[in-house]
Image (tube, rainbow, N blue to C red; front, side):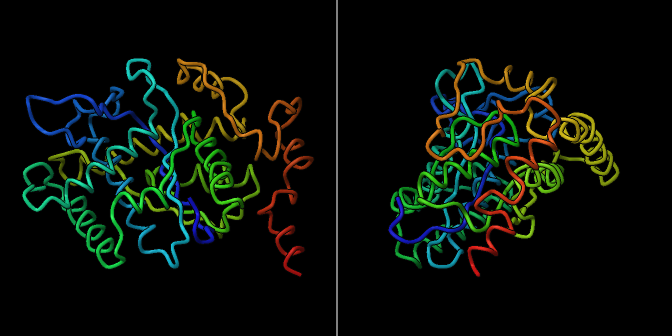
Amino acid sequence: MCATKKTHLIIVPCHSVWKHDIIHNSSINLGHLAEHWFLAPFQFEGNDHLAFIKHGLKAIQTALHANSNESIVVFSGSQTKKQARCMSEAQSYYLLIHRLISKFQDYEFNIQEVFEDEFIIACLQDIINTLFEKKLTVDTFFLSSVATEEFALDSFENLLFSIYRFRQLAMDYPKKITIVGFGFKETRFLQYHAKAIDYPKQCINYIAIDPVPPNYTAEQLEGYYSELKVLEQRNAIQLFELDMYGTREALYGKKLSRNPFMRYPAYQDVSLFDLSNITGEDEEFFNKYINGIMPWSVNRVLLNDS
């Protein structure tokens, strides 16, 4: 994949599986309808599926504007839906974003007949323009700079396994990371997951794109986003405060429920620590196996640069 040195990992944490093989009411399937996705009940109110598309497009746009072809976009998410069979979240995002950009290049296709969202249209237009300026085709760019990570079952694994996947592709660990995801999850990634693997927060850029419920008043939107923060605190932050690595209930139970095909990560060649070694407190494990020891740990990087 890497003709040039890659140093920048761009992660898209995936949240669902696009139904790539269905056509709804004889119309084209570009993921623009909720029916095109395997959505959970809570993902309908905010038109979450449109946010998924925005995450993917923004990641591609970010990579295209990076210097010297230094970036790899990694869509991260396992085979979490039994009804989707072997299609992973990551693979479905990859295929959808590729199809969407390719379709937008078709001058006979009017994207505004499918999408009304100005963000999506503007992002697509910028991607097409930048590909043209760089003399790249969609296929060439995806083959050189876009990949999937198909084992992650939660947000901690989205971060860690994407780093491992980057190492497999680039033969080194990323010097900087960009995460494109929901704004209400930013604290989780930066304050908890990055800390758990000793990745310096100053080397992570988080691009927040939240769902937008249609036709909500300003007051309704305020209430909607306030509730998201409350749910994030209760269902994620409070749990990761007690379980940094997601190895105990209830976080481990959530991962089991998202793993209907019993898939287990194949990163033995690049893995840096074994979470099965956690027998006591997480802080004890962190201090013994991770703190200052990781290739990206600040103290170790400073030592290597001296």
